[in-house]
Structures are given as C-alpha cells and as structure tokens.
Length: 146
Image (tube, rainbow, N blue to C red; front, side):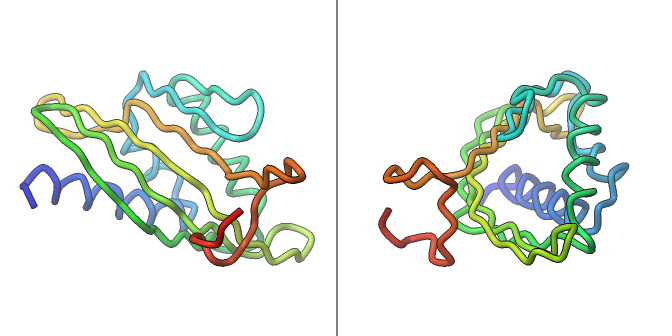
C-alpha cells in the first residue's frame, strides 16, 4: 500500500464518518469546489459544492437518527495526482416515518491532489435494480444473484 493509498483510504473513512454523523461542514471539506456528483435522485447531476451540499442535507433529513454506512470491496487506483476509488456501501437506518431500511449502493469516487491536498472532484452513486421487475434490489446479501 502506497502513502497515497493510505491517505485516500483515510479521507474516505473520514468522509463516511461525517456522513454517518450528518456533519455537513466536515463532509463538504472533502469536496472540490467544482465537484460533479451523480446521484440516484433528481436532478441526477449536481455541480458545485452548493448543489452537492443541498443534496446531502436532503439525504440527511430523510433519516430519524444516524445513517449507518458499511463500506465493502473498496479498491483504489492512483497515479500521480489522480485517484479513483470504487466501493459498495450498505446504507441503513431509521427513515422518517419509522421505516427501517437497508440497501446496497454502488459508488465511484474520483480525487485530484492539488497543493498536497486530495479532494473529491467526481462522485457517482447508483442503486442496483432487479431486472425482473426494474425495482431497487434490496437483498441483505450483496453477493446474492439477481
């Protein structure tokens, strides 16, 4: 594992901690001002920290308490001042209205180092679907066949 790999893992872990505790200011500190963020909710593409911040606040507001995010299958590829990370998250918690939910989310994160600091410049979130009914795939076992 390279120093860059360790630094990127630490950033991603700190980012997840900020997401789980709904610490929006800390969370946004990991994003570049020119972030492009693709999500599963409209408008699907968010650009710049103001739009991304509003999208995260919307996500936080959907939960009664903390958000549980378990990171699985994290891989990182980096070269020079550019890095890519891919992972699965098991996103769970109590939603507003008392619904307890869990779902798998796929995520790709692109980072760029500038002046010695890594920042997220692109992020893509997707939810797997069940091809039989085109609904979100919500199995508890990520390796269960569709």
